Length: 148
Image (cartoon, rainbow, N blue to C red; front, side, top):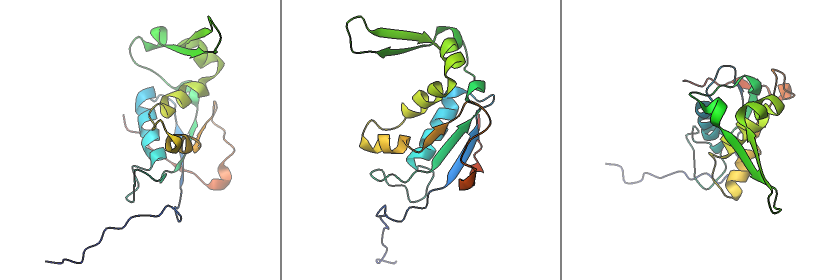
């Protein structure tokens, strides 16, 4: 029996971040969002530490081709408040998908991250694009397969 076993605790100084690209074509919104959130949080990293941002960068392309199940396309509403009296603004899923599809994925993924300074830091590593083109070719992203 070895009593000299130690636990390695990462300091967060020498984190090697990878870049992943995810194609949202035909993907279900929630499944894609939860997988992307776990990559952003670093939960797939063997050195995962809850209080350090160990996550990787995620690029999502073809955001306009995301799909939702059931009646969500007709019933789902996105609400925001302007801060003024009577300033509640609502927009349906279909209208927001036509106008700004990146916003749908950003909200879904950011909603699955921690609500803290660390969660906001993790969210900065998310890039969502409407079409199939993205400007991050220099980072040589690898394809990330989302199951489901």
